[in-house]
Amino acid sequence: MSLVENLKWRYATKQFDSSKKISDSDLNIIKEAISLTPTSYGLESYKVLVVENPEIREQLKPASWGQSQVTDASHLLVFCGFNEVTPEHIEAMLKLKSETQGVELENLNGYGDFMKSSIGNIPVETVKTWTAKQTYIAIAYAMAACAELKIDSCPMEGFDAAKYSEILGLEAKGLTAALVLPIGYRSEEDKTQHGKKVRKPFNEIFEVI
Ligand SMILES: Cc1cc2nc3c(=O)[nH]c(=O)nc-3n(C[C@H](O)[C@H](O)[C@H](O)COP(=O)(O)O)c2cc1C
Image (cartoon, rainbow, N blue to C red; front, side, top):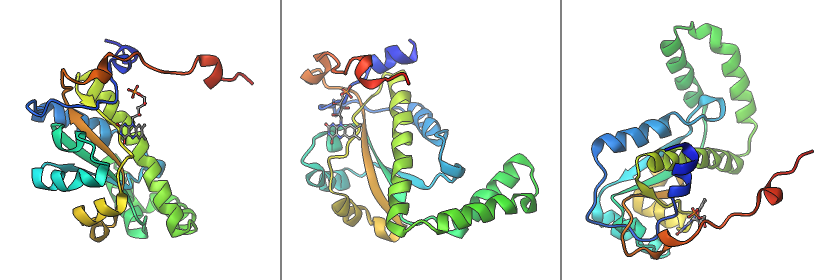
């Protein structure tokens, strides 16, 4: 099926079939799609936590407006932005680039200095917003990969980030939860799957200038 057909197939799944599990090979494809997400400066300033522990998922449910997808989906992905982007993060990325592309590290110094000065000037709170924004692109890639694999998903902002931080120990990891993505297989009982897609007409979204 084409990308658009797959996107028509997907919907924000409200009820998952808790008996169905995603295979490791499909999970790897989803991870690969997330890893291929473009990011600002290529810094990949986020982490995706794959929460497998059922007790932790039980704790996360009340912190997610009681939404059942958190416990019933096959896997729960928590997209977290870095709280800071430090010179060390920048140097680590340049080292990886140098090794991967066979470029001398010293030839990347100018790019490194540019990143360090422009990112260094961003106020701390704005850095968190900036890294969170990157996770929205990653979740879109994850959802598109899921749709191609006929795996259901539900993007979620309906959760308490402070409680997630407490339960998952995010502060110590230098992370803030931005988005949650339960993935798995829809329950036959989920009535949402039968609803027509609600979308504005093109002329309200697109404007030719
Ligand atoms: C950033 C974001 C946050 C969302 N948060 C929730 C949520 O917390 N719970 C939920 O059931 N759906 C959530 N949704 C799903 C939207 O309501 C849904 O995508 C939208 O109504 C369009 O429907 P469709 O995805 O089925 O086409 C969220 C979607 C996005 C993109």
